[in-house]
Image 1 (cartoon, rainbow, N blue to C red):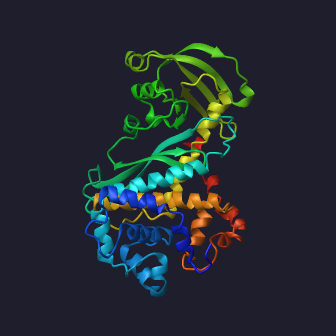
Image 2 (image 1 turned 60 degrees about the vertical axis):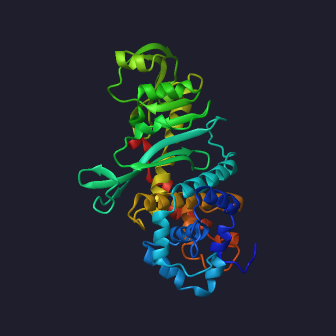
Image 3 (image 1 turned 180 degrees about the vertical axis):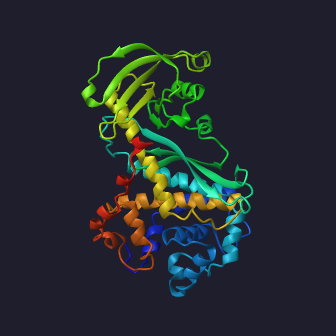
Length: 389
């Protein structure tokens, strides 16, 4: 690595710019552009993510404070606030959605060897959504409630590496379960969901693709026991049963039998009931699969706290989606660098160090050599207990 390059320039070298150019040409993103190309727009917005800038003015002012390093950061001309704002408003947000998809594909390959300690070779995904509140008077397109606006980030998280495999951005009014209508599925893969996704017709369609699901049952789900398998209650498994729906509509929408696993968490004493179409895995593995769903909760917590999507740098739908997709791209890019350079600190620590060192001219891997001891201070995984929900 060139020691004369800034840390930010070294980070940008991990972007597959040939793929970015191909995507930009597909949408004509650089048509009529003379001052700020799509590549420079991405660099500027990613710079804002990495340095925790809160507004376009803040971002542009920070870049202007280092004129001698501008070219080394990848900018041919000074970045103007109006030019960057126009780019976010007018350039198709799908450019950045496709760029994120390229980075996601790259990251998933790097993390495919992660061991979930579940004795499962197939892919395991957690599906959930989070709401990002907006002011309806400024974001009048993002309808949610009568006097409130919002967008929803529907995410399918690959639990090997916590890499988003699928993301859909909608307005706040879209119910989470509707994402199952266009969710990409893989035969043999496991999809772990909370009870908000309990829709019999949609789950049956998912099952027909050859995929497996693990989902929490609702209290009013009407089922009858067909068969009870022997189980050891000392492990927390209260029952392991083959069940069938009793309601007419439920039977019509899901005509096959299901497996019901009742689990009592020994730590909290809370009892949870899981439904799955997989009859082969041990019941404790079914419970462990659901417990691993906490990773998608941490993904939302991390991205809301440490990437700049709390305050948006534009009010239009295109500008908001542009910022969200570049934020996701930044998250995945950090994960790629962390894996390739075998950097020990967490993504949280990684971002904290980057936010104050992007202008430093030192080797990227060396910037994190002395930060492993910070892990215990920022262990966010201990802040959530999924079984309390």
